[in-house]
Image (cartoon, rainbow, N blue to C red):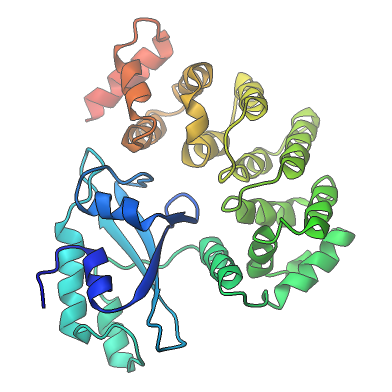
Length: 342
């Protein structure tokens, strides 16, 4: 057995077919070649959350029908590089428990021993549903039993009937938006959905790239919410989060600017920082976002600012604000308090 230093080598040596997903801010595939570079500390982890990489590892052996999932979180250093001691320790624990045979039936005691380590986590229900929907489509499996019930409800949304809908149905639908009938169904329903099913739908859309027609329907629903007598801050945040897997564009940035021009809720600020952070590469949006963030209580500002700094794509711009001579008094004071707290 050759020396094994990385998770990729470990899974390869165990003769598994495997693929990786990031489960931090949304559910998205993680390119295996890119992850090898992360493991070599050649590049920072692209999507850190709370200074960790949150991974789903899907693996199987060609000779077996059963598929397996590991949910693993590994610490990152202040530069976003993987702390290699974590994966190595995890692999030691697995070898101690299973040897190099990673597939096959486990008895309860072995399964408990394998799960009882500091590197595993249980994903939120919505993320688990999205991952299962993605894998189900990939493996050409039928959607869950909740899918048809949801399609039936969306054809005539009402205040009744949504209580029986399962999150898995929303996730299954989000993965099938390329079907023209589904796209038309969701676009038409978007204007009429009550808040609870709307929130569930938006949560599932976070992990699916949205066709232009659905982007337009979401922007219209945001505008309608903005113009209502009492806009619901949670609904606005969910509607914005729905764009998470969709490439940024000028229309969306302009909409975010209008949302930030009023006094946005903490939920909306978290939606932008947590899901739409690539949009903050726009200098005007970043400036206004930091301005609004500085109006929040100090612990909230410190937490969100610290998260933004960890994102490799955004880090240079956010750090540049520390030295910017044009930053506002409010942002300067908030940054001053951040350094005092540190």
